Image (cartoon, rainbow, N blue to C red; front, side):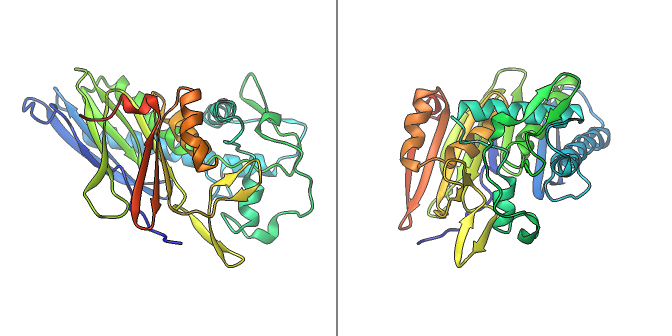
Length: 327
């Protein structure tokens, strides 16, 4: 099997028509969050305080990390996973909203996006010591068995249900940062958190996002034009472990409970909400690759599938995705 350690993609971006506007003030913010690099480019017709804006953004990202991180044993999701089943637990509005959106994406992907697969990932060596998961427990539940109620209450069907929000939390964080920058009445900006991207242009100009070529044969493989939209990508090469002699992806097929072992697949999704795009990309890539585009077309999803076979790229697009391609 040819395995490419694909670069962090979606990092090349061009402000079409925007950077030419010399009257705008430009600011670049960057840092680390969720184990990834983030950077934010802002253009505004008035002078801003970048330190204040960056401080507020870091506060937002830290809150999401404390709510949804599977790597922190003091996070909200860790506490929820340790909580008994059959009883409601009060959580923050952020955690509640992420779970709520995850359930929506679960329905949209016909169950291929399922946040109750945490135990499967842990048992394979992701996140925690795999010996800490109880064995021989029947998995007669899915994300649909998580119950949400008003006032930010969440109930798991059983105590051993382990919720994993890694496939949607980063996109949700992008949406929150987006909303914050909108509240500051900023003219134009681009948010990139580990490859999950959302753009805004008050003047309705398009921002061109170039997707890196995983084979390094060319500078990029595709350009998409976004205007107040998001693009998220899921790749089977990210976050892998060696399990019983086989390198496997963190992507798990909820129907078979097997981790994807083909490490040459990339799925990009465009959607107004980055959280939804993030979840859809994760759900689609868990499917049989031969079904991804047909499923996307049947459900109005803007997706691009990239597969590397013997060093060559194969790209497929859904009808909705074609609308965003650069001429």
